[in-house]
Length: 207
Image (cartoon, rainbow, N blue to C red; front, top):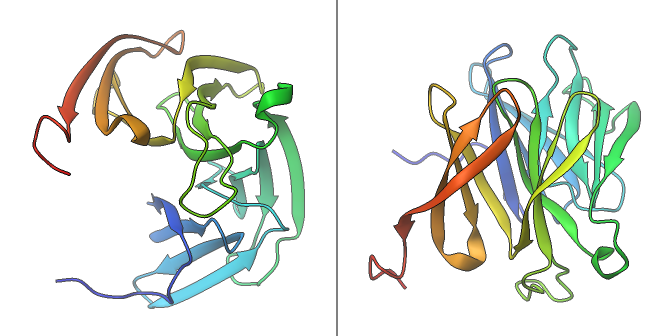
């Protein structure tokens, strides 16, 4: 059964289910907004964040009302009560794709691994919606001390990050390749290796 639970988004992305609050968080990239939906009360709230696209939202463990977001090429934290239409605090943690030819890039998808590292990727500029500059992005990890490590370059559109249940495999989608990639994941050192294509739209005959 498909059920509409909130108003229409311009470009909804980055769903994150929070067990503690039993709520679904997500973003609307082109609306520059973060959203919260609570099924038990059927309530939907949102807050607008500045004038730049927000592509993921992740609650910060042990810090009620604090969230990790992307903001253009920046990774930031914000404070939001989950009800108001505006945030109350905004703090920049770091910035990626700082090279001269990457300044028009933006972050896209982002998730945290089991140790708390943020894995996030970028994509090229989109001068017209749906027309993206390819092979301009990268995949990064950012540790709790804000140390940034680049893992993959170039990337078309970073998307679809996930791990298996025991944290030994990392799954990643670069949308431009139309493939799902699997990597061996070194959780201690935060490294990926052994790239393997585990699904290809082209090979499956899906246009």
